Amino acid sequence: MTLALDTPASVRPRRGSAFFKFMGRLFREKPLGAAGAVIFIVFLLCGLFADILAPYGYNQISPINRLKPPSWQFLFGTDNLGRDVFSRCLYGAQLSVIIGFCAAGLATLVSIVVGVVSGYIGGKFDMIVQRMVDAWMSFPDLIVLIVVVSVVGPGLLPIIVVLGLLLGVGGSRIIRGATISVRENMYVNASQSMGASTPRILLRHILPNVMAPVIILFTTRVGFVILAESGLSFLGLGVPPPAPTWGGMLSGSGRTYMLQGPWLALAPGLCLTVVVYATNVFGDALRDLLDPRMRGSK
Amino acid sequence: MRAYALRRLLALIPTLIFASLIVFFTVRMIPGDVIDMMMSQNDISAGQKDREQLEQALGLDQPMYLQYFRWLGGAVRGDLGHSLWQNTPVLDQILARLPITFELGLMAIIIGLLIAVPIGVLSALRQDTAGDYLMRSLSILMLAVPSFWIGTMVMVFPSIWWGWSPSLVYVPFLQDPLGNLKHMLTPALILGMSLSAITMRMTRTMMLEVLRQDYIRTAWAKGLDERTVVIRHALRNALIPVVTLIGIQAPLVLGGAVIIEQIFVIPGMGLLLLDAVGQRDYPIIAGVFLVVGVAVMLINLIVDLSYGLFDPKVRYR
Image (cartoon, rainbow over all chains, first blue to last red; front, side):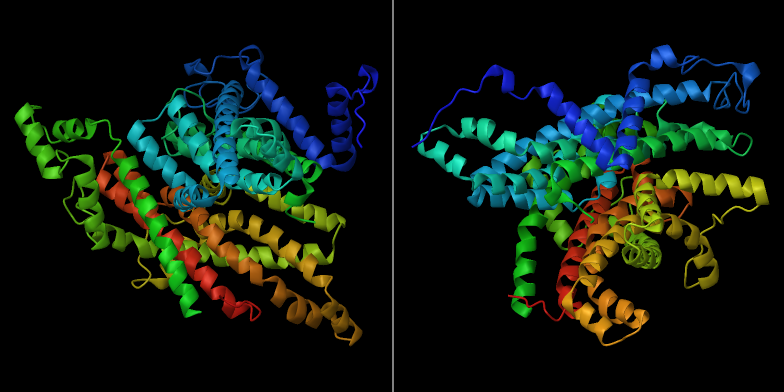
């Protein structure tokens, strides 16, 4: 016999309090991950408010201030055209935020669709899809990116779409694995026997239960996307100049002047490293807290 | 073992077919401007007749599926077409560059192992100490530092401080082994450093697992010294899964090589690809793309098959 009791509204856990509880755990148990989260949020804010925070425009040329070393006026110095490197780094954060979040979001969406459908349906369909994923994954990410960008041309949108699809297919393996383990649960069998449609089962029962790997996948992908985009920009295949991408700032004409202005080599690389490092430690901490089975190290 | 190898080879066929489809259709998504570009670069007036002739010569006038089968048939026989600009066989160009990237990759993997294994072992032996945290943080940091940034700094700062900069003149190994290694060492070190991060984490995890096994306790109980227990009993077993990492790292090495080869002017596959991208030489782009994909699949197969050599417990069914 079962008892159906209505939970009074007053004892229902509130979403907000669960979030703060989780953040409390993050700070207590994973201080390094929490530091990563803080840096990640600062980076996000810098990207969002770059227009307000940047003291100069990203393409504001000032011939009399060419190659000025870091000072209070120009925190990270100026480049060969007299543009403020600090402002360019802030605008670079904006581009990284846009590309990082959009491409990682698209990648996660693709991973969910491919992984959940392939894992739930199983059988021959799953086998064929997985062979395609195998083929896709045997190509190095950067080489696929270079080839596709060489065909479709550089630009913000192609990079977001290509990175999203590329990483989405690869990440679908993780979601597929989680789906297969969720699929075997009694509640899925129960709703199947009650005649629930496949889309309903996928959306109501499978998806909410694979959310932990989905969140982790998204976070780790943000760092990866930022790194991949900067690599492409470094090779001159990313967002075309004068857009101030961190990778682009380390290559091109700026490279020629690095011996006279070594700060040109420092600032963008440092921004990139700090943000990707923060994203990685934050992602690792999330993984340990949300899904201990995925833990890579003890 | 032979039956297992054969089955694995057969399983590779559908993956290879999908890979060839990916390569062919990705590269053939060209918006048609390659013809315009060739005509403008060769200073041919863009008349309709010339255009059709050029399309015919390149086989672009045939239906897509025919183009694919023609290309696949050629690829299976080792004919990857001719370069659009130099008119030399694509395979010849790739074969000339492949050993250079292979040398860089091999050196990077060896350097990666030389950095990662001792640090991973030490980190596991001193678990949860300040040193362990430092080394683990270092490994995550190495994953975050872009190799092109390190490469750029290596080119800039030693030159400012000590007037030294890495050699950028490539000499073939057979011509001048010492000069070749001198040129390759810095790029291999940078590539190896980023690879070592993953290997280090894996070594540490495996060492922690092995160190808790009963036979390690037995080894301690027998009164063996720490060196023997750690190196002969623990490390030999912990390193077995690390071998599989070489398979996982193959795409990373090949991808990373593109950037490193560009910075240090190493005429390998990466530079060939980048030059081809600059000139929109699609047969070369497709050739490099396919060869890299097949190479990664084969490396993974070899790693899987060699697993039994390192671990006698593995039985192939």
